[in-house]
Structure formats: structure tokens, C-alpha cells
Image (cartoon, rainbow, N blue to C red):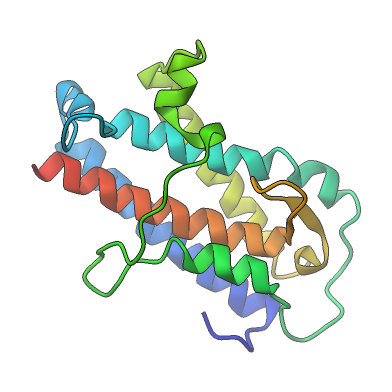
Length: 192
């Protein structure tokens, strides 16, 4: 992302990233059978449904905070979007290289680890996971469109890291790069 983007350019960038993600998802759903979605890359690794559940858990940790933040939203006053240092770092943590390979691997926090959720008594229901993923992407699209006219780069939301916050604009960038990273992971699981 270009550092000197206007709000409208940032909105358009996010919408293009979302379009790419949706195309990848369409490909996964079109070419996959139900049993394919339960395959894993290896012992102890996540299957495609668990990967999507992980995406949902992270996205919902941010999206659940957006309605309250929007109540404080105002029209954009500055020409360029402001990104926080932490927001850029968290976004960059999910980036892939030009060949869509992971640059850095991280252990997922317990709050977004599907296997930890199952151990804690949560059930992963395939149909619900897919519905939530599509709903979340629709919400991200709506908020990305709002970024063109509202000061989402001035409104803070909590991260999964205690006491640390990023702007709502940062959260949109983080969610999309994180989602893309794991959609690519799901594609690789299905190819094996």
C-alpha cells in the first residue's frame, strides 16, 4: 500500500483486495467436494473449514467493535489516510511474497485457534462457518466503502493483543491481508 493514499484510494485498494479474495473463494467452492474441505496438510494441521473458522474468529474480533466506532465517525477532514505503526506491522505480518508464499509463520493466539476452540467446547459447523465468512466479507466491503468518506483512520479498536489498539482503517487492512493469507493456505491444502 502506498503511504500517501487518499481515503478514496485506500477504499478502492481494499475493495480490489476483497475482489481478489472473493475470486479465490469462488474457485475453492466451485472445485471442492464436501470431503475435500476436511482434508489437512498433515497431522495436527488445520483443515479448510478450520482455516475459515480461524479467519472468522479474527475478523469478528474487529468487526464486533465497528458499530460502536461508527457512531463517532465523521466526514473525512484530511487528504491522506493515516496509518498507525502497529496497524502496518500487523498487516505486514500477514503478507505473502510474490509467489504467495508465507514470509513469516506465527502461532495463532488461543482466541483464534480453531483446535483450541474445539477443546474449549465450541463446535465447528461447516455451513455456519461458510455463512459467517461470507457475512464478514460483506461487512468488510461495506466498511471499506465507508473509508472513502468517513474518518475510520481516527477511530480505535482493540487488537487481540491486550491493551493495544489500531484504527478501524488499520483493522480493515489487517483483516483483508490475514484473510488472503489463509485463503491461499486453504487452496494449498486442497491441492495436496
